Amino acid sequence: MNDLRFLTYEQVLAIREEHGSPVFVYDQASLEAAADEVMNFPHAFGLTARYAMKALPTAAVLQTLTARGLHIDASSGFEAERAMKAGVEPSHIQITAQEIPKNLKQLVEQGVQYNACSLHQLRAYGELFPGRDVSVRINPGLGSGHNNRTNVGGPSSSFGIWHGKLDEVESICAQYDLKITAMHTHIGSGGDPEIWKSCAKMSLDIAAKLPDVKTLSLGGGLKVARMPNEVSADLQEIGKVIVEDFKAFAAEHGRELHMETEPGTYLVANAGVIITSVMDVVDTGDQGYNFIKIDGGMTEVLRPSLYGAQQPLTLVKADGSTPESDTDYMVVGHCCESGDILTPAPGDPEGLAPRTFPRTDIGDALVIGGAGAYCASMASKNYNSFPEVAEVLLQNDGSTKLIRQRQTLDQVLANEIV
Ligand SMILES: *Cc1c(COP(=O)(O)O)cnc(C)c1O
Image (cartoon, rainbow, N blue to C red; front, side, top):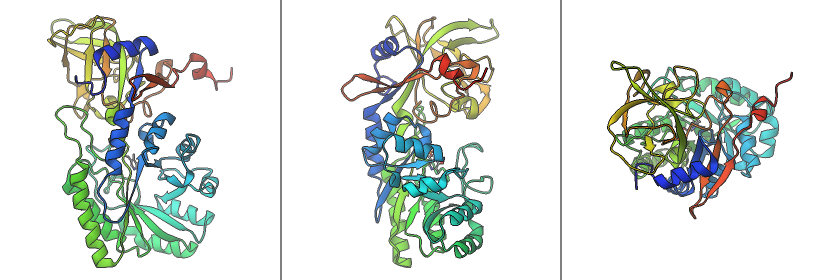
């Protein structure tokens, strides 16, 4: 196979012909394989694995993943409703959100689970549902996101209840007769088994102080290698060290904790690509750069502009030829915005790092790889009034199915009042 993981160059051109450009393509087989891997995460006393749906919330993807046994982590009340509309059992959905859903009462009455992420959230839940069991998200004081924008634990992160505030948690629970039966930490642990081990250890030490806790979620954040020089998390390796910690906890505290994990990226990142088209090629002279301009960009993928994230980029010649890569290009998106760039320096959205491609012509296809997670769901929709692009699913029989239509201009304008 080529560097596109699940598409041949012929398929790229055929899908572009059939569905137009740009278009997201998600691969059913890759989604299912990742789901099976996560469902087989090693555990000592039982496992619930959730899909963090904010990574890619399209109904067909939710259905593909939940059919393999995954439950759902929702980042807002709207996501919980969206999952229910896609057919997910309410009791399989847990909300872990920065903002309390305005309809939290109805959601919980329908069976959706709630994970309180601040003292205020815990109090609000207690007001609505005194006497109930509840889950709390704790910030254990450790974080490992690769920069300040992806760091979700430690003193610089606002997510979760600071681990030093358990006294306040206790007094809120006493006031509303709440029982904390589940605890959650999501610090973005990446791929290093040692970091997962210390996260599990810190989390278990906190769980030891919450005597009713029966379930411990270690969150998501499993690292995925999008680029050839990166290394993906090894779930079996990571799971092995965590299993030992859970067993040691059981031996010491007499509690066999059920484990939860809730990856987003890991399940979908490499199951998606964006097929775009080259719509212009320009240069800025001998001392300058060559630029490939594509008909997509930050309207489909914001990660490079936000974090200097690296996405695989593959040039597919429109005539089907496969010449050598011999020319350096910057790749830029279609927005009138200098930050709309696909070739930033790694980790530095303001730096430039040209890549080498075959000599490129208008009409060639440029495929952005690793585009399953945080692309369609997070892009700067409708900027420059570009409509949202279509999404298709490459099914196991080799056919493609349209799973979200391209937006029309009328849909972009639908809520405007003139
Ligand atoms: C975003 C998020 C996840 C998933 O993170 P990934 O890095 O995509 O695996 C899991 N849990 C919570 C609470 C999240 O906010």
